Each structure stands twice: as C-alpha cells, then as structure tokens.
Amino acid sequence: MKVRNSLSSMKTQQGSQVVRRRGRTFVINKLNPRYKARQG
Image 1 (cartoon, rainbow, N blue to C red):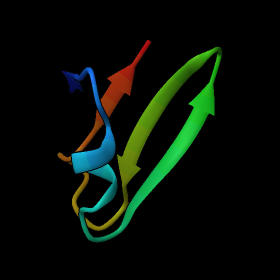
Image 2 (cartoon, helix red, strand yellow):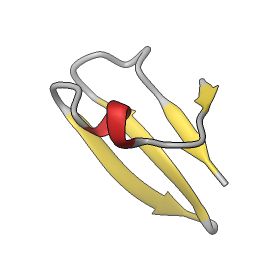
Image 3 (cartoon, rainbow, N blue to C red):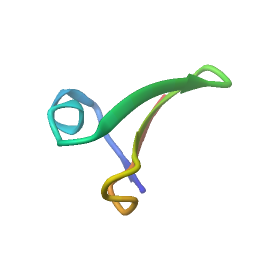
C-alpha cells in the first residue's frame, strides 16, 4: 500500500473507490486488489 500526498492519480484508475475510515482516506480497488493507497 502506498502513502501518497495526492490521491487524484489513484482515483482515475479503473474500478477505484475512495473510502474514508477512521479519519484516513483510502483508495481501494476490487478489480485490481494490489492497487491501494492511504492518505492521512
């Protein structure tokens, strides 16, 4: 999982969802499960 300053490049990926959990912002991807990111 990558920790990024900006998730905008992650959002554009096919099948990405932006989820907020416990005050952090995550990008999860069901189509490509390796494609994850956390911010905050």
